Image (cartoon, rainbow, N blue to C red; front, side, top):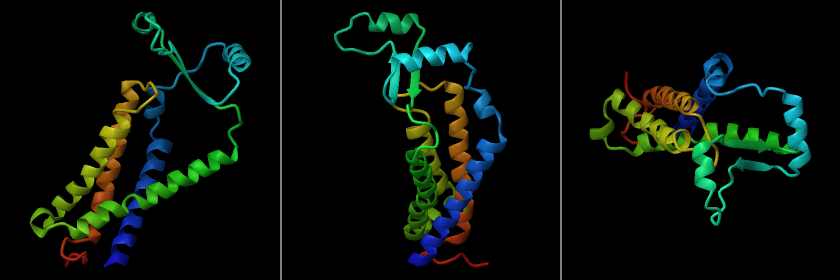
Length: 191
């Protein structure tokens, strides 16, 4: 039973990885909805590079508890947030980060696979019920990761695109897991 759950979860992870690659590689609107070119990019880059010395997230206005003018500046705008990485893009930490994301995509679907294997037959006896249970994981991800990102200002268009990505991706994982796992002791459904 455990092997079937793990194998099914890994298969769901592969589906999630493929879906993500297709979504971000072939669907251009997620990028077009939020990314903009900086006018006079070189001038802006030179100024930022001179003033910012270390990797981090920089914000304007910066919320200092003793600064009573913060809220006025925030409401008046503009609001700026810079994600600054002093090291180049080929840093080993980027490779580690990429591999950890791939590993997470592969391993996380094991959790709903296990949930399906131990769920009661009354709640998940039908195929569509099992798909829906797994889609709930996507809704959870959409609410806690995509709609409420912490610390980074994200345009609402981008958040909505990410919500669609999460819900559809986990729906696809649900289709695979519901096909592979029945609630009766984790056995494959008959037929």
